[in-house]
Amino acid sequence: MGNTPRALGHAAVRILLALTDGERHGYALMQELRGDGLGAVLGPGSLYRNIQQLVADGLITESSGASSDNDDERRRYFRLTAAGRRALAAEAGRLSDVVKRAASKGIAVTGRR
Amino acid sequence: MPDAPSSARRSVGVYRYLMRGYPRRFRAAYEDAIVDAFRLELEHTRRRSSAASIVMFWLFMGADLALGVAIMRAREGWGRLTYGARLLRGSTGFTAAVAMLAITPVWAWSRFATLAPGRAGSSTLTFAVSALNALLIWALARGAAVLCTRVVRRRRAVGGLRYTSVRRARLVARLAKISAAAFAVATLTDGRRGRVRDALVNSATPPIYWAMLALTLLGVVALYFAAGSWLHLRDANQTDRAWTHR
Image (cartoon, rainbow over all chains, first blue to last red):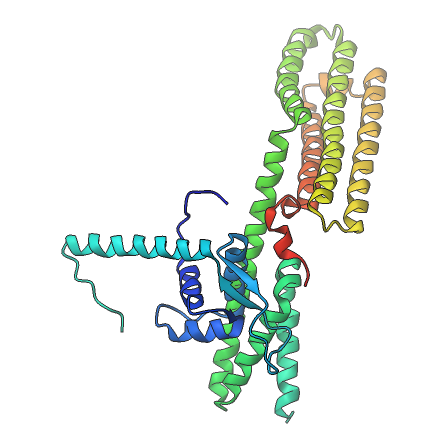
């Protein structure tokens, strides 16, 4: 992985954000993204496509998962890595700069909800 | 009317079948997890007991799957193409072949323009062009064979090499060598016998000869790409371990 941080896609940012609270399995992530109000619902295919990329980039990693009797063994758990946390902070910084820039140009920043 | 569990099983079966559109390695890594998420989402939708919600569910899942397959296939195709191009660029045989490819037609046509009016020395010209073409094809095919070996070695270094991949690589290498040798012998023989002389000297037919030569070259270049992409960039990719079947 290179040193230059690559801009993250919107879905990737949402997934990283969802994982800041702790490890999640795919369906739990889907549920969390459904309720985050940050964009469209991701289907399982889109979700795992993004997960695959994030794993390859080293931003998230697969974990053993919180083992409980209810857990399906097919379920895959993921957690944020230190690199993922840094990438998320950098992306949040970038977005914050965009907001400041918009505000400096007189654009009224409105919430979506 | 089928009961709910069997209907759900059928839905999951249909979705799993449709997932075949995804690249194989992606499926190997995530198929069960994706199907699991699909199943849970289906259960969630079914609890609403509305036909409209089921229809919407399938529309959403269908669109998600179609989009995902299209994106992943396009990425994979592009990755293979660029990987093949990188390998080609780094191959000495290919560079030499491209140089010859650029020089040969210019040289041949300049000679043809000089010699054709009197047909003097056309056999020599034909033989020389054939020999160069044969050498060119041989260099390309030899490069393809070397490429196969290199890819296999790299796969071995990364690990997770499947025996079928080795067999395929060997097969491609053998085919490349055999076809190159056959082409070289046939071209040189024909050149010696002057069979292609009419095609080369008769002004009505040269385009066909050159078109066939171009097609042959394209075929060998395609072999390069096939060798590179068949065993694929993932072999050399650091992410290979992430794809390991669990």
